[in-house]
Image 1 (cartoon, rainbow, N blue to C red):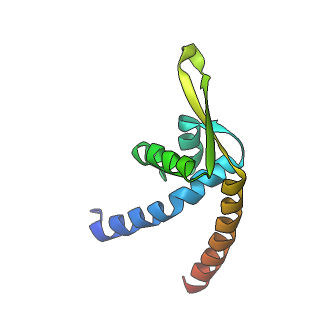
Image 2 (cartoon, one colour):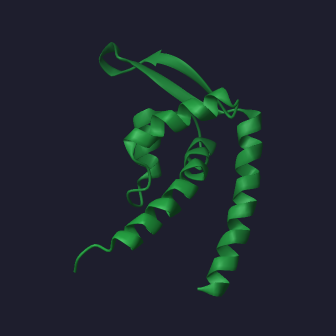
Length: 110
């Protein structure tokens, strides 16, 4: 069966809308560096592309939702660790509520 370009586009838009919530939810469980965040977010399937992750982390950090620090990693390579700020934690809580309502609405329709 050939891939349907319309469905691929629709699926891409769904992912784009959910990525920010997914990243905040991952960091809601604790501090992590980029590849850890990517692995955790993609644990159930391909949700976040690595090319999309770092620009999103940078945007969330500039917006005050995340804080970051550098630490030497394995082999001395520095890693940037991210964590939620209080503002980021509050946003995650609000997004979870909105997601729950949206999901319930869609479950009722679908």
